[in-house]
Image (cartoon, rainbow, N blue to C red; front, top):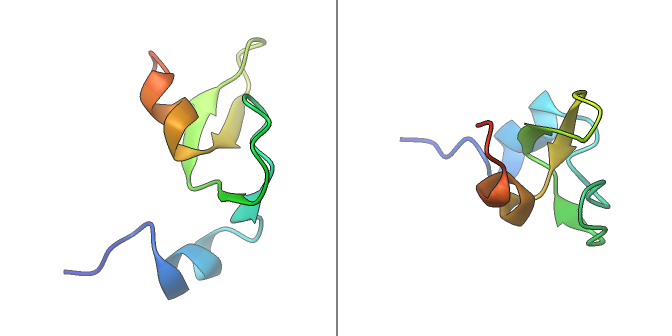
Length: 56
């Protein structure tokens, strides 16, 4: 089975697949997961912030 958070699939689905995480500020990480920020907006976050998030 294909992995949905790697390689071609990730690059094809999200144009901003790598960047700075808006929650923790880590630079040049994959932003493949979605979570809500403090105002309730959905944002793309890194793997660590997604695992810390309570609303998955």
